[in-house]
Image (cartoon, rainbow over all chains, first blue to last red; front, side, top):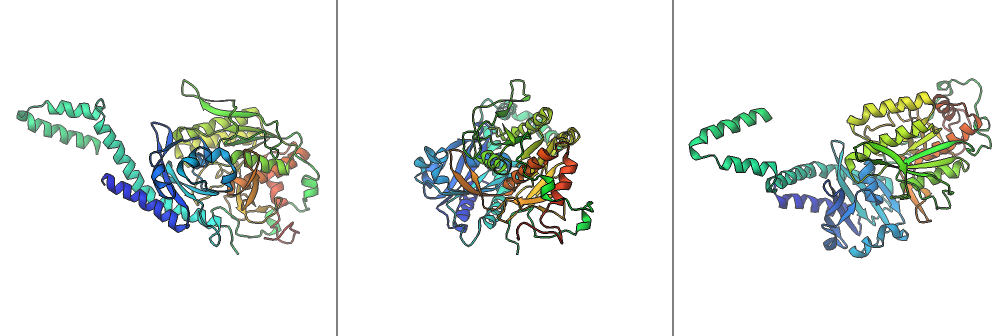
Length: 194
Length: 275
């Protein structure tokens, strides 16, 4: 997978979530271990261009609860709760009344949170909505797990002081006359790691 | 008709009276009468509690499970209140049913999601050591690596007479501690009556309590309408607090029996409400 495929999976997930609930917006935030925060990776609907890259602490708010517990939730009446929207919602241009959120989990680890803002729940019922959003999150989680793994690998390769870069630099110093030995090393490593 | 769509919810089944080992009726007048949970100590392990909310009642000591410099986890006093709203909702439900119970909060949300299981274990271990009568755990973990330690802790609670009341997951998956037989596990029904209780004829979930469109207090002073097994759990804690005021020597085994005996879905017995 390349980066544009990753982005397309995420964009498709949030679009599908928004359309499924005729919602004002939907977004996906992924957990970033380094900054210990949830980072918005894709968004569809109102405020979508302003959200990408924004990070929020992983231990507060509805998204934080969902990420910590792995439990989906519906909360109505968010608009009258200034703790959740004062700074953040102003920045996005959307102050939602209802938030529907489900965890994106893979092998018991929470990768992130899929959120739908102002879903239309009349006729659907909020419990069916939890069901549906959980399934949407499940469907995207395998692709997201691959994407996160790919990102980690890329980050390791591009870190100039990282072990992978140092290893590559060492191998670069080996002259062409030792190409066979290099191949032997690769074969041995492959055997060791598989 | 099945109206509740998340997992571990009531299907409206009834149980025959011979599944309950009580030849004479145990009714609610005997189980709790006019008890209000006075003298019963409850620990809410959750997102914290807003102690200033009028529906929470004030005087809730706040603690947090946090990692120390050596990588260990400790429970220490906290000032953050409720960082997500969930814990305040649970505390409010308990207070509505058992207004004189003494609630203490331990916050377990962490920035490092890998640490949230450790926070939960630390909080639970502390609650058992402190000898709370009841522990409300409207959360669970799926991590197999934590299962054994959590199981040992649940056993320790059982032997000490600390009753763990824990929410079944909202999705049809296995998580802990609610799956352990030493824990009273709670799912949801959709009956709009805070004292309507069902015993589950089909384990692992023990009982069903109101968990659909429940109006709860929310940090900042207002209320919200929420749904999930998380909110069924404190209903059972509130009713259990009443029982323990009346019968302070009861442990988890006796509490589970009494909850089953006063359930509203036992064939041939009068029910408070109809599903």
